[in-house]
Length: 208
Image (cartoon, helix red, strand yellow):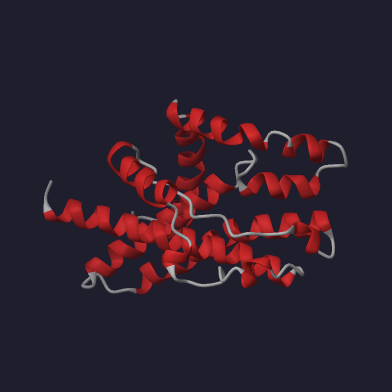
């Protein structure tokens, strides 16, 4: 393993930590705007990674994936939210759920645009921007999969009619096992990679 490979691994992990921290802060801020102060009272509306890092989801799993998978994913500790503070329950759950992935899409777009204007002489900066763009695109696509507790299920919950929405949320106790099962058999790679490749192609063109 040469220095360049180690540098890419470090950049990938740093990018992931920043991406998931901003993802969670976006959830908390959206909840605050919808009438729920729980995240603010819990001091989770902060960019300090130590307030958000989850040992397994933010450190152990990414370290495993960075050596074994073309897609590096992870998660932070969920920001505490009390949906019963929302002025409109279903709308609030949907908006708060969408806030995290939309933030990652926005970060991917921003880093992609910056990558296009940064001179080639700033090669390390350019590589980091590419990795940050790719990381955010992957994270956004992953989180929009409609399997509880992923954010896509919150968005779908807000769109489903009464009865079907509760059935969807009833899957949450099995969701983590479904996600790990899909991850183990490589199904998530087959879902995420084609979509994220399309997104990255739009944002980065030939820069990745």
